[in-house]
Image (tube, rainbow, N blue to C red; front, side, top):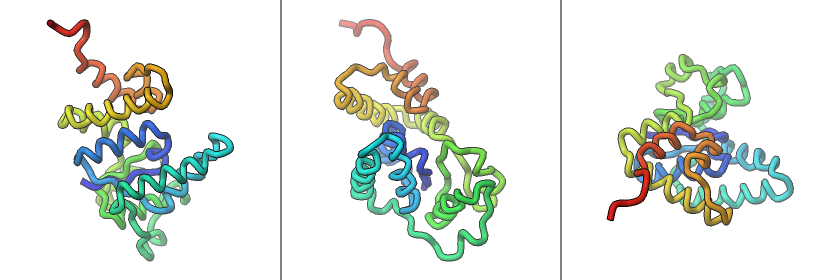
Length: 189
């Protein structure tokens, strides 16, 4: 399954790391375009001085880790498309050019389902998408999340409650499912 990742899925960091961690488990093939990556870099400016530079470094790493993920623009696609926000047409065009099955975005209102369906696409939000993958591949998703959780704790130098981290990453349903699956109380002897 091919999944086009919108910029609002690639940035913020924890969401991106979970989504790409699940992709690394072989559950789907991520796609994006150079323009989507550029939107990520520009969005990181709100972090203050150095935010964009940090994002560009992260983008270089993502490109190196996923060399087949970047979809080149296909001539003429954008001119035949319409979306409520014309600035998002390039995202739909990249999904079409990459033969994506799913457009993963936090921006549902700008990607109407009927328009995507005409192109053979469906739209999913990251939390619902990951929650569904967790239902069918719990070990793989849990392993990816565990790596991100451990890294978040190591980088921040503090302990993060998993559900709180997932909620902060705008993945509350996934966090709740993972919490329910964790054994409670002390481990048996």
